[in-house]
Image (cartoon, rainbow over the protein chains, first blue to last red):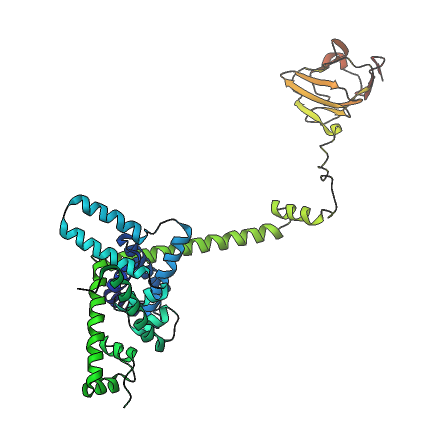
Length: 172
Length: 242
Protein backbone atom coordinates (compact mmCIF):
# COMPACT_ATOMS: atom_id res chain seq x y z
CA UNK A 1 0.00 0.00 0.00
CA UNK A 2 1.46 3.32 -1.09
CA UNK A 3 1.62 6.23 1.30
CA UNK A 4 -1.14 8.08 -0.54
CA UNK A 5 -3.52 5.17 -0.54
CA UNK A 6 -2.76 4.52 3.12
CA UNK A 7 -3.49 8.15 3.95
CA UNK A 8 -6.78 7.95 2.08
CA UNK A 9 -7.79 4.74 3.82
CA UNK A 10 -6.70 6.13 7.16
CA UNK A 11 -8.73 9.27 6.57
CA UNK A 12 -11.88 7.24 5.83
CA UNK A 13 -11.30 5.06 8.84
CA UNK A 14 -10.80 8.07 11.10
CA UNK A 15 -14.02 9.57 9.85
CA UNK A 16 -15.97 6.37 10.44
CA UNK A 17 -14.38 5.02 13.59
CA UNK A 18 -13.26 7.88 15.78
CA UNK A 19 -16.73 8.63 17.15
CA UNK A 20 -17.61 4.99 18.00
CA UNK A 21 -14.23 4.51 19.64
CA UNK A 22 -14.58 7.69 21.67
CA UNK A 23 -18.14 6.74 22.65
CA UNK A 24 -17.01 3.35 23.84
CA UNK A 25 -14.12 4.77 25.83
CA UNK A 26 -16.28 7.49 27.30
CA UNK A 27 -18.76 4.93 28.53
CA UNK A 28 -15.98 2.73 29.81
CA UNK A 29 -13.96 5.36 31.66
CA UNK A 30 -16.51 8.06 32.44
CA UNK A 31 -13.81 10.61 31.67
CA UNK A 32 -14.27 12.65 28.52
CA UNK A 33 -10.74 14.00 28.40
CA UNK A 34 -9.22 10.60 28.97
CA UNK A 35 -11.48 8.98 26.40
CA UNK A 36 -10.51 11.61 23.87
CA UNK A 37 -6.80 11.20 24.61
CA UNK A 38 -6.99 7.41 24.34
CA UNK A 39 -8.93 7.50 21.09
CA UNK A 40 -6.53 10.01 19.54
CA UNK A 41 -3.47 8.12 20.67
CA UNK A 42 -4.86 4.87 19.25
CA UNK A 43 -5.27 6.56 15.88
CA UNK A 44 -1.81 8.12 16.10
CA UNK A 45 -0.35 4.67 16.65
CA UNK A 46 -2.33 3.23 13.81
CA UNK A 47 -0.95 5.92 11.50
CA UNK A 48 2.59 5.23 12.69
CA UNK A 49 2.00 1.58 11.92
CA UNK A 50 1.81 2.54 8.28
CA UNK A 51 -0.59 -0.22 7.26
CA UNK A 52 -4.14 -1.05 8.21
CA UNK A 53 -4.75 -4.27 10.14
CA UNK A 54 -7.41 -6.78 9.12
CA UNK A 55 -9.92 -5.45 11.61
CA UNK A 56 -8.91 -1.86 12.28
CA UNK A 57 -11.80 -1.24 14.67
CA UNK A 58 -10.67 -4.11 16.89
CA UNK A 59 -7.05 -3.03 16.60
CA UNK A 60 -7.91 0.45 17.81
CA UNK A 61 -9.88 -0.94 20.74
CA UNK A 62 -7.03 -3.24 21.70
CA UNK A 63 -4.53 -0.38 21.61
CA UNK A 64 -6.85 1.81 23.66
CA UNK A 65 -7.29 -0.98 26.21
CA UNK A 66 -3.51 -1.35 26.47
CA UNK A 67 -3.00 2.37 26.88
CA UNK A 68 -5.66 2.47 29.55
CA UNK A 69 -4.09 -0.44 31.38
CA UNK A 70 -0.66 1.23 31.24
CA UNK A 71 -2.10 4.45 32.57
CA UNK A 72 -3.71 2.64 35.43
CA UNK A 73 -0.52 0.80 36.22
CA UNK A 74 1.69 3.84 36.13
CA UNK A 75 -0.89 5.87 38.01
CA UNK A 76 0.08 8.82 35.90
CA UNK A 77 -3.51 9.44 35.38
CA UNK A 78 -5.98 8.13 37.86
CA UNK A 79 -9.22 6.89 36.52
CA UNK A 80 -12.09 8.28 38.45
CA UNK A 81 -14.04 5.54 40.08
CA UNK A 82 -17.52 5.52 38.75
CA UNK A 83 -19.19 5.56 42.11
CA UNK A 84 -16.93 8.18 43.67
CA UNK A 85 -17.26 10.44 40.68
CA UNK A 86 -20.97 9.97 40.67
CA UNK A 87 -21.25 10.85 44.35
CA UNK A 88 -19.42 14.09 43.74
CA UNK A 89 -21.52 14.78 40.69
CA UNK A 90 -24.70 14.15 42.60
CA UNK A 91 -23.56 16.40 45.38
CA UNK A 92 -22.94 19.15 42.88
CA UNK A 93 -26.28 18.60 41.24
CA UNK A 94 -28.08 18.62 44.53
CA UNK A 95 -26.37 21.82 45.45
CA UNK A 96 -27.45 23.36 42.18
CA UNK A 97 -31.02 22.49 43.02
CA UNK A 98 -32.05 21.63 39.46
CA UNK A 99 -34.45 18.76 39.99
CA UNK A 100 -34.34 17.50 36.42
CA UNK A 101 -30.59 17.37 36.43
CA UNK A 102 -30.59 15.60 39.76
CA UNK A 103 -32.85 12.89 38.39
CA UNK A 104 -30.80 12.54 35.23
CA UNK A 105 -27.61 12.28 37.20
CA UNK A 106 -29.14 9.71 39.46
CA UNK A 107 -30.09 7.59 36.48
CA UNK A 108 -26.57 7.88 35.09
CA UNK A 109 -25.31 6.81 38.47
CA UNK A 110 -27.50 3.75 38.46
CA UNK A 111 -26.46 2.83 34.94
CA UNK A 112 -22.84 3.02 35.98
CA UNK A 113 -23.44 1.00 39.09
CA UNK A 114 -25.25 -1.62 37.03
CA UNK A 115 -22.34 -1.76 34.61
CA UNK A 116 -19.92 -2.09 37.49
CA UNK A 117 -21.67 -5.27 38.51
CA UNK A 118 -20.78 -6.97 35.23
CA UNK A 119 -17.56 -8.80 34.68
CA UNK A 120 -14.96 -6.74 32.85
CA UNK A 121 -15.31 -8.85 29.73
CA UNK A 122 -19.13 -8.67 29.67
CA UNK A 123 -19.06 -4.94 30.31
CA UNK A 124 -16.61 -4.38 27.49
CA UNK A 125 -18.64 -6.55 25.12
CA UNK A 126 -21.88 -4.79 25.94
CA UNK A 127 -20.36 -1.33 25.61
CA UNK A 128 -18.56 -2.21 22.40
CA UNK A 129 -21.73 -3.53 20.81
CA UNK A 130 -23.76 -0.50 21.80
CA UNK A 131 -21.00 1.82 20.59
CA UNK A 132 -21.31 0.45 17.08
CA UNK A 133 -18.71 -2.32 16.95
CA UNK A 134 -19.42 -5.50 15.04
CA UNK A 135 -19.38 -9.00 16.48
CA UNK A 136 -16.17 -9.66 14.61
CA UNK A 137 -14.49 -6.60 16.08
CA UNK A 138 -15.69 -7.53 19.56
CA UNK A 139 -14.36 -11.05 19.13
CA UNK A 140 -10.96 -9.82 17.96
CA UNK A 141 -10.63 -7.08 20.55
CA UNK A 142 -11.60 -9.35 23.42
CA UNK A 143 -9.82 -12.44 22.05
CA UNK A 144 -12.91 -14.63 21.99
CA UNK A 145 -14.49 -16.70 19.26
CA UNK A 146 -16.83 -14.73 17.06
CA UNK A 147 -19.43 -17.47 17.46
CA UNK A 148 -19.43 -16.84 21.20
CA UNK A 149 -20.05 -13.10 21.02
CA UNK A 150 -23.83 -13.45 20.73
CA UNK A 151 -24.00 -15.60 23.84
CA UNK A 152 -21.73 -13.18 25.67
CA UNK A 153 -23.96 -10.28 24.71
CA UNK A 154 -27.12 -12.09 25.81
CA UNK A 155 -25.50 -12.83 29.15
CA UNK A 156 -24.21 -9.28 29.56
CA UNK A 157 -27.55 -7.76 28.58
CA UNK A 158 -29.48 -9.89 31.04
CA UNK A 159 -26.99 -9.22 33.83
CA UNK A 160 -27.14 -5.51 33.16
CA UNK A 161 -30.93 -5.44 33.15
CA UNK A 162 -31.09 -7.38 36.40
CA UNK A 163 -28.58 -5.08 38.05
CA UNK A 164 -30.34 -1.98 36.84
CA UNK A 165 -33.76 -3.21 37.98
CA UNK A 166 -32.40 -3.97 41.41
CA UNK A 167 -31.13 -0.42 41.68
CA UNK A 168 -33.88 1.46 39.95
CA UNK A 169 -36.76 -0.80 39.02
CA UNK A 170 -37.70 -1.71 35.44
CA UNK A 171 -36.49 0.72 32.80
CA UNK A 172 -39.02 3.44 32.00
CA UNK B 1 -39.20 -27.01 13.62
CA UNK B 2 -36.07 -25.71 15.29
CA UNK B 3 -36.48 -22.31 16.91
CA UNK B 4 -33.56 -19.88 16.75
CA UNK B 5 -31.44 -19.38 19.83
CA UNK B 6 -31.49 -16.18 21.86
CA UNK B 7 -28.16 -15.12 20.43
CA UNK B 8 -29.40 -15.74 16.89
CA UNK B 9 -32.42 -13.57 17.59
CA UNK B 10 -30.23 -10.87 19.11
CA UNK B 11 -27.92 -10.96 16.10
CA UNK B 12 -30.94 -10.46 13.90
CA UNK B 13 -32.12 -7.53 16.00
CA UNK B 14 -28.68 -6.00 15.96
CA UNK B 15 -28.41 -6.43 12.17
CA UNK B 16 -25.40 -8.67 12.59
CA UNK B 17 -25.49 -10.83 9.53
CA UNK B 18 -24.41 -14.41 9.82
CA UNK B 19 -24.79 -17.65 7.93
CA UNK B 20 -27.99 -18.38 9.80
CA UNK B 21 -29.47 -14.89 9.78
CA UNK B 22 -31.58 -15.37 6.69
CA UNK B 23 -32.98 -18.67 8.00
CA UNK B 24 -33.68 -17.03 11.34
CA UNK B 25 -35.47 -14.17 9.67
CA UNK B 26 -37.60 -16.56 7.64
CA UNK B 27 -38.43 -18.58 10.73
CA UNK B 28 -39.41 -15.59 12.85
CA UNK B 29 -41.68 -14.34 10.11
CA UNK B 30 -43.74 -17.53 10.34
CA UNK B 31 -43.41 -18.43 14.05
CA UNK B 32 -45.60 -16.54 16.50
CA UNK B 33 -43.75 -17.55 19.69
CA UNK B 34 -40.47 -16.47 18.11
CA UNK B 35 -42.04 -13.19 17.03
CA UNK B 36 -42.89 -12.58 20.69
CA UNK B 37 -39.35 -13.44 21.71
CA UNK B 38 -38.03 -11.22 18.99
CA UNK B 39 -40.14 -8.26 20.15
CA UNK B 40 -39.11 -8.80 23.77
CA UNK B 41 -35.44 -8.93 22.90
CA UNK B 42 -35.74 -5.92 20.64
CA UNK B 43 -37.45 -3.94 23.38
CA UNK B 44 -34.85 -4.89 25.95
CA UNK B 45 -32.02 -4.14 23.57
CA UNK B 46 -33.52 -0.73 22.85
CA UNK B 47 -33.87 -0.02 26.56
CA UNK B 48 -30.24 -0.90 27.19
CA UNK B 49 -29.12 1.24 24.27
CA UNK B 50 -31.18 4.10 25.64
CA UNK B 51 -29.75 3.75 29.15
CA UNK B 52 -26.20 3.66 27.87
CA UNK B 53 -26.64 6.90 26.00
CA UNK B 54 -26.96 8.55 29.42
CA UNK B 55 -23.22 8.01 29.79
CA UNK B 56 -22.36 9.79 26.58
CA UNK B 57 -20.55 13.07 26.17
CA UNK B 58 -20.21 15.13 23.02
CA UNK B 59 -17.60 13.71 20.70
CA UNK B 60 -14.62 16.08 20.59
CA UNK B 61 -13.73 17.68 17.32
CA UNK B 62 -10.32 16.34 16.43
CA UNK B 63 -8.85 17.35 13.08
CA UNK B 64 -7.36 14.50 11.13
CA UNK B 65 -4.31 16.68 10.46
CA UNK B 66 -3.58 16.82 14.20
CA UNK B 67 -3.45 13.02 14.33
CA UNK B 68 -1.23 12.62 11.29
CA UNK B 69 1.08 15.43 12.44
CA UNK B 70 1.54 13.77 15.82
CA UNK B 71 2.16 10.43 14.16
CA UNK B 72 4.78 11.85 11.79
CA UNK B 73 6.44 13.84 14.56
CA UNK B 74 6.72 10.74 16.71
CA UNK B 75 8.05 8.74 13.77
CA UNK B 76 10.71 11.37 13.09
CA UNK B 77 11.64 11.52 16.75
CA UNK B 78 11.98 7.78 16.85
CA UNK B 79 14.14 7.90 13.73
CA UNK B 80 16.40 10.49 15.33
CA UNK B 81 16.65 8.44 18.51
CA UNK B 82 17.40 5.32 16.49
CA UNK B 83 20.07 7.14 14.51
CA UNK B 84 21.63 8.53 17.67
CA UNK B 85 21.62 5.09 19.23
CA UNK B 86 23.27 3.62 16.13
CA UNK B 87 25.97 6.29 16.19
CA UNK B 88 26.54 5.69 19.87
CA UNK B 89 26.85 1.97 19.34
CA UNK B 90 29.22 2.48 16.41
CA UNK B 91 31.34 4.95 18.37
CA UNK B 92 31.47 2.61 21.33
CA UNK B 93 32.47 -0.27 19.12
CA UNK B 94 35.14 1.82 17.45
CA UNK B 95 36.44 3.07 20.78
CA UNK B 96 36.56 -0.49 21.98
CA UNK B 97 38.70 -1.80 19.17
CA UNK B 98 40.93 1.21 18.46
CA UNK B 99 44.16 0.76 20.41
CA UNK B 100 44.94 3.73 22.57
CA UNK B 101 41.32 4.88 22.84
CA UNK B 102 40.32 5.48 26.47
CA UNK B 103 37.58 2.87 26.32
CA UNK B 104 39.94 0.40 24.75
CA UNK B 105 42.50 1.00 27.50
CA UNK B 106 39.81 0.69 30.11
CA UNK B 107 38.53 -2.57 28.70
CA UNK B 108 42.04 -3.91 28.33
CA UNK B 109 42.63 -3.03 31.93
CA UNK B 110 39.44 -4.78 33.02
CA UNK B 111 40.23 -7.87 30.98
CA UNK B 112 43.85 -7.99 32.07
CA UNK B 113 43.00 -7.54 35.74
CA UNK B 114 43.48 -10.78 37.69
CA UNK B 115 40.21 -12.11 38.95
CA UNK B 116 41.40 -12.56 42.53
CA UNK B 117 43.25 -9.31 42.79
CA UNK B 118 42.32 -7.65 46.02
CA UNK B 119 44.76 -4.80 46.02
CA UNK B 120 44.20 -1.85 43.75
CA UNK B 121 46.24 -1.87 40.60
CA UNK B 122 49.46 0.04 40.88
CA UNK B 123 49.37 3.39 39.24
CA UNK B 124 51.99 4.17 36.68
CA UNK B 125 55.07 5.49 38.39
CA UNK B 126 55.44 9.26 38.17
CA UNK B 127 58.07 10.58 35.87
CA UNK B 128 61.38 9.92 37.55
CA UNK B 129 62.87 12.89 39.31
CA UNK B 130 66.10 12.54 37.35
CA UNK B 131 64.35 13.63 34.25
CA UNK B 132 63.23 16.85 35.89
CA UNK B 133 64.99 19.82 34.42
CA UNK B 134 64.63 23.26 32.99
CA UNK B 135 65.98 25.02 29.93
CA UNK B 136 66.54 28.76 29.69
CA UNK B 137 67.89 31.06 27.03
CA UNK B 138 71.62 31.74 27.05
CA UNK B 139 71.58 35.32 25.78
CA UNK B 140 72.14 37.06 29.13
CA UNK B 141 74.26 36.53 32.18
CA UNK B 142 72.70 33.87 34.31
CA UNK B 143 72.67 32.97 38.00
CA UNK B 144 71.95 29.33 38.77
CA UNK B 145 71.26 28.93 42.47
CA UNK B 146 70.40 25.99 44.68
CA UNK B 147 68.11 27.58 47.23
CA UNK B 148 69.15 25.36 50.16
CA UNK B 149 72.73 24.61 51.21
CA UNK B 150 73.70 21.04 50.46
CA UNK B 151 76.45 19.13 52.21
CA UNK B 152 76.44 16.19 49.80
CA UNK B 153 76.13 15.61 46.11
CA UNK B 154 77.71 16.95 42.98
CA UNK B 155 77.14 19.60 40.38
CA UNK B 156 78.47 18.86 36.92
CA UNK B 157 78.96 21.69 34.49
CA UNK B 158 79.35 20.74 30.88
CA UNK B 159 80.13 23.11 28.05
CA UNK B 160 78.46 22.02 24.91
CA UNK B 161 79.28 23.66 21.64
CA UNK B 162 76.21 24.50 19.64
CA UNK B 163 73.83 24.07 22.57
CA UNK B 164 70.93 26.43 21.97
CA UNK B 165 70.17 27.08 25.63
CA UNK B 166 71.22 26.50 29.21
CA UNK B 167 69.93 23.29 30.69
CA UNK B 168 69.72 22.52 34.40
CA UNK B 169 68.79 18.99 35.37
CA UNK B 170 68.54 17.28 38.74
CA UNK B 171 69.15 13.55 38.97
CA UNK B 172 67.41 11.99 41.92
CA UNK B 173 65.79 13.91 44.74
CA UNK B 174 62.70 15.94 44.19
CA UNK B 175 63.41 19.46 43.13
CA UNK B 176 61.54 22.25 41.45
CA UNK B 177 62.63 25.25 39.45
CA UNK B 178 61.78 28.93 39.46
CA UNK B 179 62.94 30.78 36.39
CA UNK B 180 63.22 34.54 36.31
CA UNK B 181 65.08 36.82 33.95
CA UNK B 182 68.75 36.03 34.38
CA UNK B 183 68.12 33.62 37.23
CA UNK B 184 67.29 29.95 37.72
CA UNK B 185 66.38 29.02 41.28
CA UNK B 186 66.57 25.31 42.10
CA UNK B 187 64.13 24.38 44.87
CA UNK B 188 66.15 21.62 46.51
CA UNK B 189 64.24 20.95 49.71
CA UNK B 190 64.55 17.26 48.84
CA UNK B 191 68.04 17.53 47.37
CA UNK B 192 69.29 15.69 44.36
CA UNK B 193 72.61 13.98 44.57
CA UNK B 194 73.62 15.12 41.13
CA UNK B 195 72.91 18.23 39.11
CA UNK B 196 73.93 18.54 35.49
CA UNK B 197 74.24 21.97 34.00
CA UNK B 198 74.81 22.27 30.29
CA UNK B 199 76.13 25.60 29.06
CA UNK B 200 76.69 26.94 25.57
CA UNK B 201 80.16 28.47 25.32
CA UNK B 202 78.63 31.67 24.00
CA UNK B 203 76.79 32.48 27.21
CA UNK B 204 77.82 35.95 28.45
CA UNK B 205 78.31 34.85 32.05
CA UNK B 206 77.26 32.26 34.64
CA UNK B 207 77.23 32.36 38.43
CA UNK B 208 76.65 29.14 40.37
CA UNK B 209 75.41 29.48 43.94
CA UNK B 210 74.47 27.01 46.68
CA UNK B 211 72.52 28.65 49.43
CA UNK B 212 74.03 32.09 49.80
CA UNK B 213 77.49 30.99 48.72
CA UNK B 214 78.90 31.54 45.26
CA UNK B 215 80.42 28.27 44.17
CA UNK B 216 81.65 29.37 40.78
CA UNK B 217 81.49 32.35 38.49
CA UNK B 218 82.38 32.62 34.85
CA UNK B 219 82.38 35.61 32.56
CA UNK B 220 83.15 35.77 28.92
CA UNK B 221 86.19 37.97 29.55
CA UNK B 222 87.48 35.76 32.36
CA UNK B 223 87.04 32.64 30.27
CA UNK B 224 88.65 34.10 27.21
CA UNK B 225 91.38 31.84 26.01
CA UNK B 226 90.43 29.03 28.38
CA UNK B 227 89.19 25.70 27.19
CA UNK B 228 85.67 24.79 28.26
CA UNK B 229 86.37 21.62 30.16
CA UNK B 230 83.63 19.90 32.18
CA UNK B 231 83.70 20.72 35.88
CA UNK B 232 82.45 18.85 38.90
CA UNK B 233 81.66 20.59 42.17
CA UNK B 234 81.67 18.33 45.21
CA UNK B 235 79.11 19.86 47.46
CA UNK B 236 80.62 18.21 50.52
CA UNK B 237 83.76 20.22 49.95
CA UNK B 238 82.32 23.13 48.00
CA UNK B 239 85.48 23.15 45.94
CA UNK B 240 85.42 22.63 42.23
CA UNK B 241 87.42 19.79 40.73
CA UNK B 242 88.66 20.37 37.22
